[in-house]
Image (cartoon, rainbow, N blue to C red; front, side, top):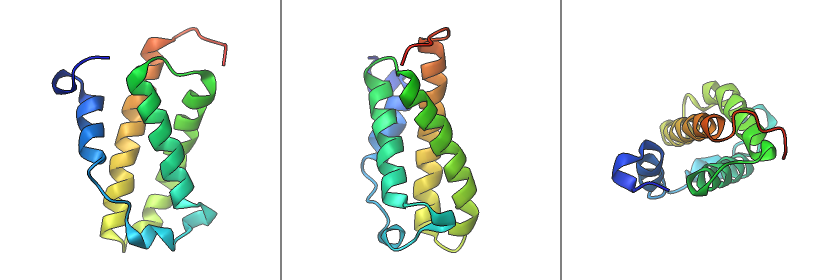
Length: 110
């Protein structure tokens, strides 16, 4: 796509890739959510957004995943590392969703 320096999503993604998944989040399931699975789904969608337009399924996964992060963040209030990690992942998901909306405004295929 575009080079990392001029692409905010790519720049934030590069920074995010250096973060380890928080150890504490392996043991938590706030609001019944598997944080490893949530991370995997959102990261996969963000990665896909960097390489081209997203299909409807991935755009929906970003929307749902962002709402899930919004729901679980209050439960991570006492886990600074987990809260930081998922706040940054949410920011990436929002940027990827915005990009997806620009890429395929009228797309109904998935």
